[in-house]
Picture 1 (cartoon, rainbow over the protein chains, first blue to last red):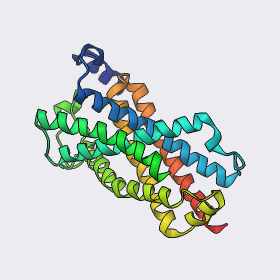
Picture 2 (picture 1 turned 120 degrees about the vertical axis):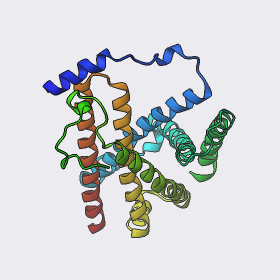
Picture 3 (picture 1 turned 180 degrees about the vertical axis):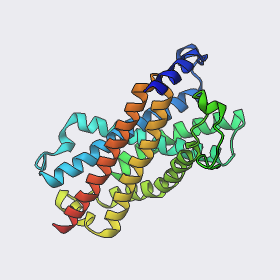
Length: 131
Length: 130
């Protein structure tokens, strides 16, 4: 704890980078923050789904309820499906950056818009053809 | 990676509480490896949704009891939770500047995910034996 306190004091003396609200929203920064936001959302949703599965098996918790008829669950499913598909598409973009492709500004903007269009298209395709 | 325990000298950066913890590269790599694993598994999940769209709850449970469906499903949820845990750690490290709350939040997230993963595996065993 004492060591942590010392570290905190050092951290607070360091300069901080300008905060997000100062910057003009750009395609690169917006997609980056959206990637994190959808990731956090999916972690929470996945935990909820896992606990739902655990409870439904061990206690028979809400077995008789049709979750599809609940408007909140339906809306949550639409949002989570978009979040998953967006995170999937942008994640592939991130993996390409990790192996060293697509770093030019032109390529970054181009793949960014491709991800936006594809994720919306895939979400519509998912709800109209798959489910 | 150098062996920290075999060295007699302590780095000045460590004495001053600065510098890297030398755990970062493994974390980074695991995040990418789990991401690679999730790509085919999530495509499988979409295919599974397509295949089961006409089925009701009992039909779905019957199908999920087959190992060829249960294995990818469990693998997707567990790898997803692990990938999410690594991601949550990065997000917490980046946005929580108070070191004490950062430390406790990371520990809480890790414990919560491990409990979830463990309970899920036990539930799967129970699900198969019934």
